[in-house]
Image (tube, rainbow, N blue to C red):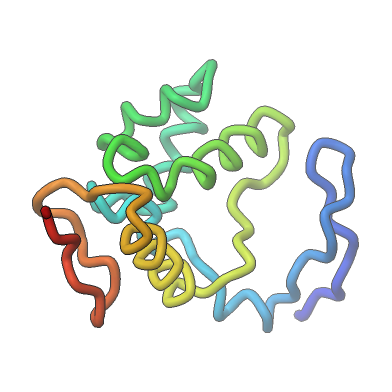
Length: 132
């Protein structure tokens, strides 16, 4: 059964429309990687928040080191934490895994973060950051 697009609320504020089931099949799912530096999936992060109930978002770093590498995933970790604190279902990204990866690659190439050795590649075409 398909769902209609309904207004989506986060902590009492409307943030647009919730994607339908047809739309969501192309968006990030629980098996997709959020922290590319330490290979941490969305499922692992959401389960960590649910089971350990961190008091502050930075405690999510205890989940496999998520958020302590290049820093790209930190805003997503904070949003998952805030969604959980408000009792909302966490993690409805409005991008595909490929878009997420491409945006991370651009973030790193712009010099905003340095992935640790062994981190997942930024994207198939991305060059590793040069150390000049």
